[in-house]
Image (cartoon, rainbow, N blue to C red; front, side, top):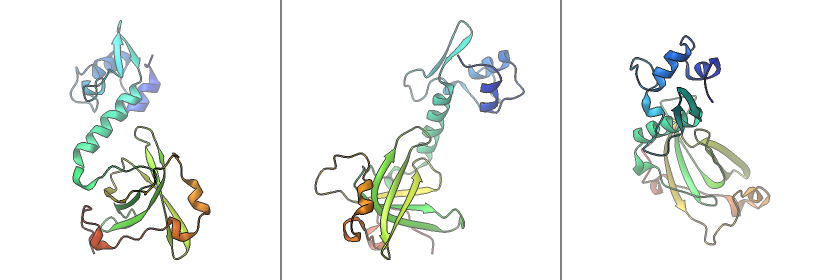
Length: 189
């Protein structure tokens, strides 16, 4: 059962009472940030629903699925390829310190952590003989593209490839010249 001040604070509706909150979640008020599409995301199962004027279900899950679907609609699917643990990938993202520039990081995906909004992956590469790992949020608005460079020759039977941390640099390094990155958006120079 989700109701009360905790749900109102989470959704940014601190000033609404229970009756107003119920009407907002049912879609009766269009002036707030929440609508009835929260209750049924992409035609999937109802994550949250009402029974006997009480809210049941996981409202946080419904909210996160709605935010993910909005982000995926705004992305260009040509720039984001599917990948798995063990694949060599190149990631183009906006530099958080200088938003006018894009950076490219290539390496081997050693882990994928599942979740809804919190889904992330770790990419490892050797740069000047030093192992560098970067963690990227899957649904970050800073990500502009992911390109699959190559898949492993043998199938990977592990979900986390932390063993690559102990391997020599030639086994865990990836180089991706700019001419190979054809599926990623162009970086501003």
